[in-house]
Structure formats: C-alpha cells, structure tokens
Amino acid sequence: MKKNKGFTLVELLAVIVILAIIMIIAIPAVLNTMDSARRKSFIEFANKTVLKAEEKYMLRGFDGLPVNGVIVYDIVNDLDISNTGDYKGYVIVDATETNSKGFYVYLYDKTFLLNLIKSTDLNTENIENINGIEPINNIENLMNNTEYDAYYTANSTVANDTVNGKYDFLESLVLDGHKYINTGLIPTDKTNVEIDFSCSEFKAIFGSRTAYQSEDSYAIFTHLTNTSINYNVYWANVNSAKLINKLSLGDHAKLIFNNKSLKVNDTTLVTLIPTVDLNGKYPMYLFTVNNANNPDYRLFNGTFYSCKIYDENNLIRYFVPVKKKDTGEIIIYDKVEKKEYPFIIYNK
Image (cartoon, rainbow, N blue to C red; front, side):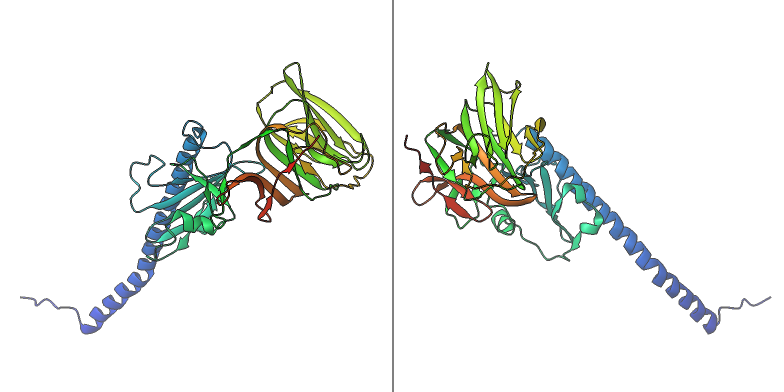
C-alpha cells in the first residue's frame, strides 16, 4: 500500500506567505471599496435632504415663514424623512443671495461631515472625516460660525439674532412716507443697488442728485399709472422711464439698478447707455432721494424688506429693518458693517 505524503514545512510556509500577500493586497482594496460606497451613500442622503428642503421652502408662505431671509431646516425634525439613521444636521436656505437661492448642507454621522457645503458642490471630495468626534450639533453655535446675522428656524416665524442678542430682525417694515436714512455713500460708476420692497405711488425710492438729469444723478422713482407701476431712473445725464404692467400698487418687487440696466423681478425694463461718467456729489438716501442735501418731499410709503449696495460686485451695505431689544426702537441695520442707522424724520 502506498503511503500518502503530507506538506513539508517549507511548502506550508510558502502557502502562508502567499495568503498573507493576497490579504495585504486585497484588504485595503475591500476597505477602500466599502469606504467609497459609504461616502457615495452619504452624498445621496445629502442630496435627498436638499430636495426635501426645496419642497418645504416652496411652501414656506403656508408654513408662516418669510419670503426672504435665512431659513434653517433640521434634517431629523423638519424635512419629513422617514428614516434618518445616524444622520444629523441642517439644511440652510439663504434667500438673500443676489442671483439665486442657496441651499447649504451641514450633515454628519459617526464618521463623516459635510460642513455647510452648497448643494451644487455636494460630492465625496468635500466630505470630512471626523472619526467619531461629534461636531457642532447646536443650531445657535453653528450659526454663530456663519456670516448670517439673523435666521429663521422652520418651527418659528421669529428671526433668531446672532449679533450679541441686541436686535430682533424683522421680515419687513411698513413706512408711512415721513422718514428716511442717509447711507453715507456717494454714487460712482460702479454703484449697484438691489432693493426689495412693495410698490408705492409716485415716490422717491433711493439715490442722490444735484438737479433733474444732472451728471451726478443716481436716483430711482416710482409712480402709479393706470393701476400699473412706472419706474423713472436717472444715471448721470440719462433719464429713462419704463412701465411694468404686471405689477400694481402693493405688489412685491425686487429692483436692481446699475450703469447697465434696471431690472425688476428678473425682467430687464431699461438698458442704459451712459454718455458721460457718473460724478456723484451727495450721499445717497434710502426711502427718498437726496436733492443737493435736501430730501425729496415724495418720501417712500410702502413695505420695505431689504436693500443691498454693491461697489461693482463687492457688497458694501446690506440694510434690513430691526427692533432694538433694550428700547423697542425700530431702526435700519447694516449687516456688513454691523452699524445702526436711526431714521431721520422729514419735516415739510
């Protein structure tokens, strides 16, 4: 009978070495595949939160939330996602952006973090490893680390103020045609203003000038014509008027005015072709026009939401209405320089 021979020690060691080499090569590859799959799943969930936030944002009026401002949705409690697992965080909607709404995701679990990444930039490259260390999980602490002075949570119509607790930020302010503010800014060729307001009758809205159609003019007027709104704008020696018949008295309007055009609610009403440089001499007023250091008598009456002033593309003023918590006084606040602008009362 033939005797079976077993493996020699050398053969066993060779097999062990080969298996070890295979494991050294295979295990990292398997781990990388698993990590890649988890990251992909993380991004898929982040995109899901954005879609849910977009749905909620479209219904914000029915939820009692403001039209503009910064709105925060809690991923677990506010977005109607049935199973959030270990995921926590917020979707922040910035409705103050110039060109479009911005959706920012702050999402984390035990391993990964998306730290306020814009929805258009959601990809695995922007995921941070936190290795079980829980990041900021308090909305007030999180928002204190952002540029926003005020925000609305999905379960509250009151703006949360992050500027030392001094102000209640108001969604809007109704003005009665008796007060204005001095922005302190003299217009230049690079001045670009964006105003959110409800249309009024023949009123001076914003700007400054020496006289009618003078070369230092930067001024905006509105007046009512057959239940529609007519806009008059002055840029240097250019005077242009345009009727917009889709808006009537009291309708909400977002107006953008610069050396190229006048836009209202994303519609270009006037294209400007200045023939001279704008040589401003007087600081611009908000809620009226500065006529050689005298307020125009046709002060704005209507609803004011916000006003942004740019030096070309650089935001230099961002005016919003606020209520001072200590005195109850309502003023205009600049979110850029964090400065108060008390109203100036107009005396005829």
